[in-house]
Amino acid sequence: MQKITNLDGIDRRIVRALREDGRISLLDLAASVGLSPTPIARRVRRLEEAGIITGYAALIDETALGFGVSVFVSIKLDRQVDDALVTFEKAIAEFPEVVDCWLMTGNRDYLLRVATEGLAQFEQFLVGRMSKVPGIASMESSIPLRRVKGGIARTE
Image (cartoon, rainbow, N blue to C red; front, side, top):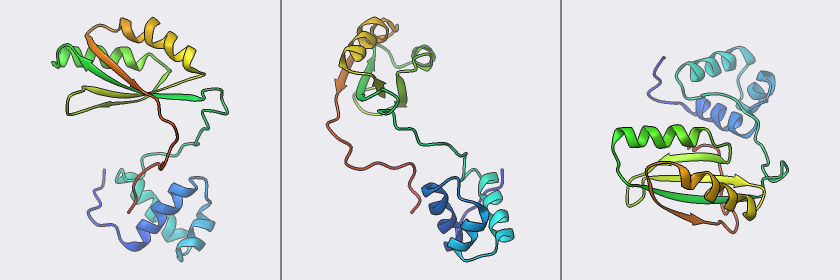
């Protein structure tokens, strides 16, 4: 992997444009950045090889798919040792309801975002599956009222 230590203004414009529209053609990207397609293609390839651009994906509206409820769940493990972390992370990887999982500092060990069809399904998940994961000492759920700001990645 090639390391890029300093992005110039053109690289930053490329990254911002791709963040906004990952399907933009090289021709349109070149026009929006102010370069011809060949140097744009080279720069995009270099940004990919450096690991700055890690992939391309479609943004999915979970509500349109029927998953209208998101719940943040804070997890405290009974022990924070390597084998307990591995056991927990393997279990969580099997739950499609868990969209995001972060290992945290502070008084909780993990923060999860869980997406379900509704609160009844969340309760079934929490009681029927999540509470059965070995090593969990406590769980705390928070239901967001609305998203104030959202993003894919910071680019500036």
